[in-house]
Image (cartoon, rainbow, N blue to C red):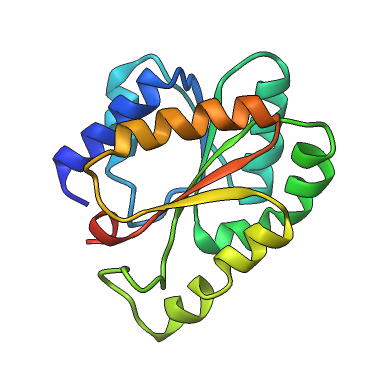
Length: 168
């Protein structure tokens, strides 16, 4: 991902009022992490499992924080139990930022990621989590603000799936 695109993502998170981000770093969107650290307004919580990211994020959201959970698409599978037993059950707004590896627009797509990526949207649909695929940065700030507003209105997780330009 290009530096300008990473900066626009961070700007969108800031404008949306996100103040806590739990994450397990991955390669596609990782350029946002140094920018989030430099900004100083975000509390960053690195985790060892995406399930942990969802649970910690849910706790922060229940305490009144605006939370984003950043993960690779395979992390969605790992976090399903926490998503259902905590976030969905207790009506917790979480903005899920997911690198959509293996999608049609994934610039680095290969057979390993294609298999993983093929199940992302069916899993989100099975969990009844609304999502939007974001392939270019033209409106990334508005996408983030809209998704944050939507997760707060629903009181349930909402996902943004980043592909295309975000996967260079």
